[in-house]
Structures are given as C-alpha cells and as structure tokens.
Length: 194
Ligand code: G4P
Ligand code: NA
Ligand code: NA
Image 1 (spheres, rainbow, N blue to C red):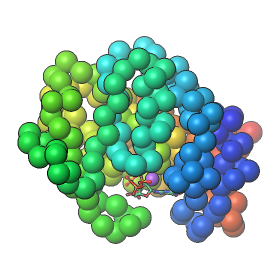
Image 2: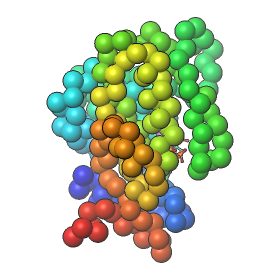
Image 3: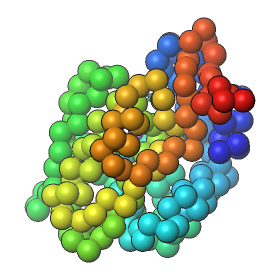
C-alpha cells in the first residue's frame, strides 16, 4: 500500500536491526486519515471472504481494525491483555508469548461476541513471530468460528510469523512488508523486486 509505505519512509525510525518505531501514526499517535485508507484497503483485500466480524488485540490493533469494520460493515472485538473487572464470565483465553518483549500475556475475549457461524478476520498492527495472530486464532477456534483471514498493517518479512501462518493455510494480507532494517534503513519487499 503506497500511502503506508510513504508514511513509513518519512516517519518510521529504525531502532535496531529488528525493531521499527512508528509511534507518530500507529503505536502512540494515530493518523485517522491514514487509518481510514488502511480500513479501505483491508475491506478491498477481504471483500470476497464473507467476513462477519473482526477480531484484534489491544491496543494498537484497534484503530486499523475499527476502520476496517467501518468499511466492511461488521462489528469489531478486541482481545484484552489484562483482566477486566466486569469481564469475568465465559472467557475464551490464549497465552501469547512475545519474543520481542520476552514476556507472556494471557489474552481474553468474552465468548458472547464470537459465534459458531462467524467468519472472523483477524487484524493486527505488526506481524513479527506470529504469536499474537496464533493466540487470536486459538480463541476463534475455541468459539468454533471460522478464520476468514488475517490482515496485518506492517509485516516484518525477515521474521518467520508470516511464512508460518501462510504455511498453515491462512490467507495473510500485509499492507507493507519490511524485508530488512539493516544499516538503519527500511527495505520493503517491493523495493527488492524492482
Ligand atoms: P508476534 O505477535 O508477531 O510474535 O510479535 P511480538 O510478540 O514480537 O510483538 C510484541 C509487541 O511488539 C506487539 O505489540 C507488536 O505489535 C510489537 N512489535 C513487534 N515488532 C515490532 C516492531 O518492529 N515495531 C513496533 N513498533 N512494534 C513491534 P503489543 O505489545 O501488543 O503492543 P500494542 O502496541 O498493541 O499495545
Ligand atoms: Na504493537
Ligand atoms: Na499489536
């Protein structure tokens, strides 16, 4: 997605060979116009997949997921990372280990929001090792619902989450794929083919 790639080129900061900082439009400050376009792009890419609901993970997945939900005319559910006071009964849960943060989080969703006949689009801001996406997929399976696909804003193509998920048969659509962060420079997959 050209607009997103331009934004990453202009505002992304390479923190190390493996971490890209995009807090000016995605992970802290949020750019609503860009998110709106991201929502449209997800809607276009999954228009034939019969999506009935979107599932994401708090917090940075929420903005792109809501914009996609707006375009696709479906509700959006976000899994919680912390236990909620009011959300206590009938929880679907999964453990998500973050290699980046070296910590484990239990994520949870109330089962009343995921039905057996739902076709769920999983959306997240980043795809690195794929643990968050797999945790969300586990929750969809516990609900006996169907995974319609996975929409990712930024995939780090040099980490193995994307290939792992695609090998497992999931339709994974990433709006920008970063193939390298070497030498303080962001290299996109499309840059490589050109
Ligand atoms: P994985 O799910 O693909 O295995 O990824 P990982 O555990 O490594 O990701 C843990 C957190 O770090 C996630 O955010 C993820 O979005 C974020 N992350 C991973 N790689 C990068 C990166 O290169 N740049 C940035 N900016 N974030 C990255 P989170 O803890 O869920 O936080 P939130 O922002 O959603 O609140
Ligand atoms: Na994040
Ligand atoms: Na995230």
